[in-house]
Image 1 (cartoon, one colour):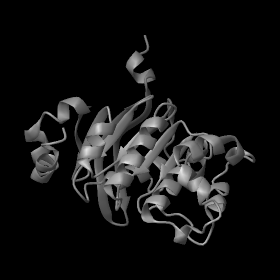
Image 2 (tube, one colour; image 1 turned 180 degrees about the vertical axis):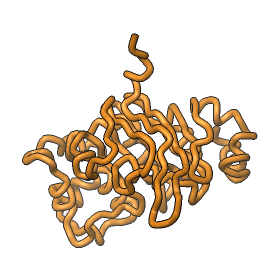
Image 3 (cartoon, one colour; image 1 turned 45 degrees about the vertical axis):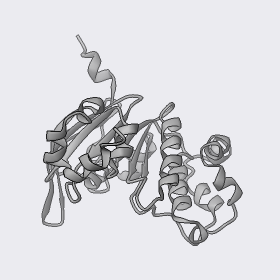
Length: 249
């Protein structure tokens, strides 16, 4: 009999090993993302979180291990083909086209003609500032507006899974609140795998977590349990996380 828990997972990563040049970055990362959830990858800087996202998408293909999306193994597929299956990616540092307008940045994200027109109401409902700034070049946007554009660009095509890397990086607190609200709204229709250094933001958004340490997945579970486990937070994320969260968690 099929295990119903497997059917609930839109993404499964089993013991992947990824190299960048001669460096062995991921040394056995495993994770599962439940359909309809927000799941966060946590860990100190350099732990391998961004490389995990890139490995899922085939940008840094794993040499060993298994990646399956919606029940289909995607190891060895080109990044373009993996994305076309319904995986969107918001890289760290935004990576928008600074010389193109907001409209042009969105338009080039289409997979099929008319994608942007079909999604524009939803996108501008999430990020109304982008509609007002539609003709402005990317390098004229603030950091927060660029981050909103980076997320919006991943919404143009139909995606069942979004990989979002550090959405709060460099944002003022008021913009972090706006980004959190947008991600919550987005999660009603799209499964999200998030990398986020801001533990307060991560703990308020995600239902599930995976901790990566030194290229290995070391712990996973319900976020509600993690916020109560100071020993685990201290071991893998640091005392600063506990201090920052005392008044908010």
